[in-house]
Length: 319
Image 1 (tube, one colour):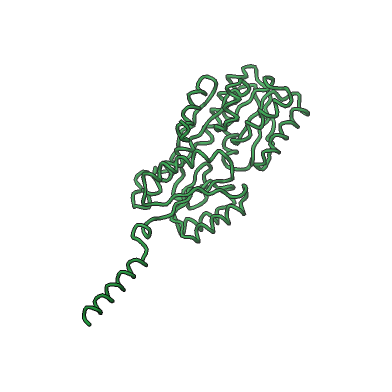
Image 2 (tube, rainbow, N blue to C red):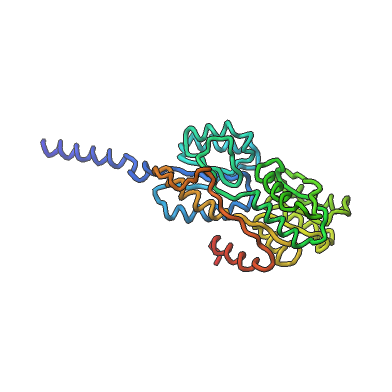
């Protein structure tokens, strides 16, 4: 009888242990990188995230893309992730200033880190990314070198009112002071790539005085390049861009694009997650007084485009 009771007790205990979640599963915290739209620019950040994941097995890391670049859609995605128990967000907000209430809600319940475009009005823990003003100044350097006699530029942006676009154009204007190069206007496409290309085609038809085009968002420069090809105007317009879209790099190799200013989204993904884990574990010593960790931007032109392209392949695991 005693043996039967002991066996029954042991069986019950084993069933309880088997049904209980493992310690490692309970301890793992979910960290999310939420992009501002479904564009290829973020693939490098995703590659950086995968490296961080390999080094931090006690965390679960995921990259999330809103269906389109919309404040409402991104907010809904953030709400869903928060409801599912997100411990932290590395976020590129669509419109940081208008999303302050949403961002503060996230910050009240989880760790919030901004990237790509800061949200100074929010209660985010810190920002990790580029200085978009400095990136604009670097783009001005490319223009001054390529257009010593001056010219008239039109800029193209997905959302000209977004902080990163505003700051890039501000840096450009500052860098062009004292020159004969002017930025005539900025055309918006709301992150619609077909519209981005048609905007360029419209300018090529209507504005014969424009001899310079600036691609403010990552996909804008490739669309400028395509529109110039279709119009038979490659080489007649100086093109400067931002970021490292493959079409932009191909344009530099072909001599159609004077240069681009690249950010380091790979490092955003890698360092962003590493710092988030460090913060959650109680170490905030890495955060500077201004709560902005700036990852430098770099000018890419014909002199270094091949070396940079090789580095991209390494980051993306294609070499």
